[in-house]
Image (cartoon, rainbow, N blue to C red):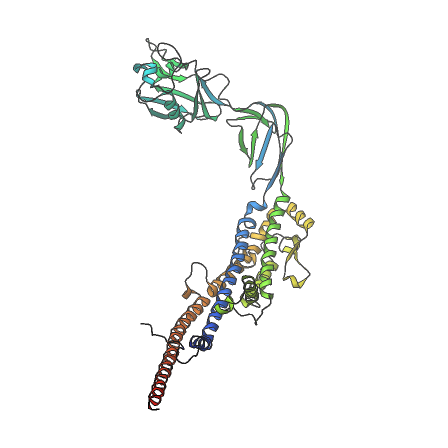
Length: 520
């Protein structure tokens, strides 16, 4: 229950202002606790910013310089890209290949119908039921096929259900297209009134045997290749195939380094090189695969730039000026400043929050040592960064930034990209471990140390040092606020009592004056 407060009506004193002034003195210790809490929160946030920076560097190392494929990138050139193009896997050796006499490209098997007419004549209605267009006797309840893929000798069975009274030519085409095992693309052209079915895969040997529903395909205008048993007097039909269009379903034929060969697809891989044939050609096309020095160099440079950016930001925090006269603003102080003034004040108050920090100082030292170490398992001449053209700047004030001798590094990449990779990322122990693996070890140690002190977004306050300190301050601030409320109530109680006493005195004085005045 709140206490009734009496202002200075009897005494004429500004009790509200007197209490506010007294409470300013009482509140000073709480303001200091809040300022201390704010400093800890700023320090926590600054530490977490450093961890984000280190995590970005660690992720960049993992995504770029730890991947062997980064150091084995190939540059593939073709003497005629209109005829042949190629790409190379990182593991493939550098090579020069000649492709000539491309006599034919691989094509997909295709089946084209004649003009489709409904029973009784006239163009078919693609949205009307199959039974209404071709007669119920010509539309089975299911279609069954034996499908042989290009290059295979083993057919696969495909079954497609049909409702003669609801399925239309359009829905039939959709069912053909959606069956992965059948593996075709079908469409109907209303201008020519023809239907075309094309195999998804190129190459020879593709076939579609219609084991049930041949009568429907006859009505759809397709030619059927019918095989009969000649030993049977009745010439019993044994197999019914859709008849392919001439010149479709063939392999690509070409000569590679003097060997005449063929492939079911125009894109094929030999010795880690993937070729794509684009046109027939009687001449020779030369394909060359070499180390992509520029791409590898750019990957290493991106790592060096990220490392330099990281240590530059850490160094700035370690050397940032600390303005001890600028403490966090209290609520009352903030009310007296404009937004811009408060922002400038806070900028100075936050400055130097990590100045000379031991965790970050040790991190920089350990990271530099990791990069300077010798990798014993690497090849001779590739065991230290300096040997491949990466050294530290001569300016000690830059805190060990790396600089690249571009010509030397590119020469080393061309000489032995695999050796450069082992220098960076050799998977070993101790002195055999690649330098960026050692660097990652130091980064992870630093991240762990910072998380122990400043936590992360997944940790609660009692799981890290600064969080515990902030929680302790919250407890002290809460207790101090409760005490402050009691002090304020006490002041008001005292002044209210004084006001009542003054009021009683005034009443007595007025009574006496009236009493004596009545005797005169």
